Length: 287
Image (cartoon, rainbow, N blue to C red; front, side, top):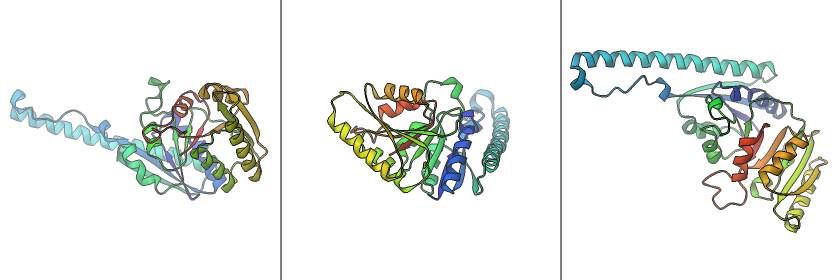
């Protein structure tokens, strides 16, 4: 792994993603690109349509000039704000031992800029919600699902509060996404020495196929040097995972962005979305 892409808008969720980015960057000995995208809609003062017929040509021209000047000032302020956001992120990562950091500012939309920079990175880190978090506390951020849907790399979705990573949980369902999680553990020693839990949730307790898949996953992670705690539970996936996270004081949840659903290319999995909404710990998603 050569580079991490850290997306920020300066919101509380974004700022609390910085310690997680530092943790992963140090563990992986990798550089960090910090990306801040300014929504250009915030620079528009008002509509600049043709008002000459209603208020007179001279007044219309004066108003248009004033609006253009206001937009220039807003653009300058937004640029200065972005510089401060990026500098704050850089200083936080540097204070936690990250040496190689690159700052990137773009105007436009994050979802439009994202593919260009994701292509140059191996892991994306972003907060669960953005600037309007307090107004939509039970929802995911406006950009998050679109980012997850378009991403081709692992994504770490961070909560509002940071906590040290000591205990990991893999929500394992045997899907291709989950196979990539196991491959990640085999190839990179980032989680060595941490407590690892494997959890499979089934609708019927006598699901022999799920039990076999869990045993196979256990064997694979043991070959990577872990001594996993393996559990098979019955119930609704999101509720069971959430309770397990609380009961076992899990600090990081790893799961597939999609299960076996045929509509996985259109939306992220329903269990994944529900877990992201309710989770108070970071969720590490694999496609």
